[in-house]
Length: 144
Image (cartoon, rainbow, N blue to C red; front, side, top):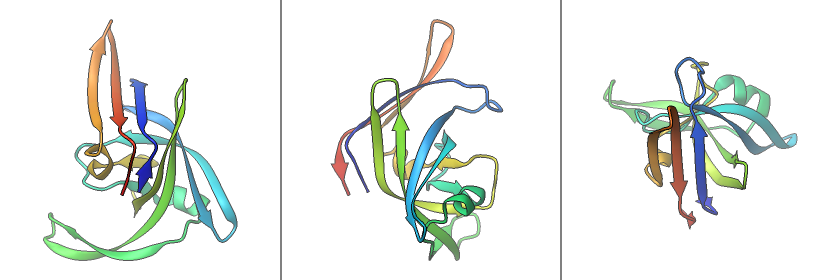
């Protein structure tokens, strides 16, 4: 994964009490470049980034299986994964996270859930200012 740097300030939107924000994702499939606009949530309780099965059905990215250890079950379990480019558009700039590994999740409550695998690479804060709630996230440029 790589990024050219990232700086987001996200005002709180009342989406079932969650900090969601519009995001664009891109992937290459057998049909060529696929693009979709979705809702994204930062989730500090998730250790990996997940994308909903419904979005995967629209984008048709190349899927691969990988065994992942889930502590709740204390065992390795096979799951489907894909790789996506995640585009964050702000008022002043467009930033891209390239080649992000995403677990395909059958849970439809959010389209893209950014987990700690992404959040720990940057500076994540929730702020209260002038009776408004904001979430900020900043990442330096890097290549993994």
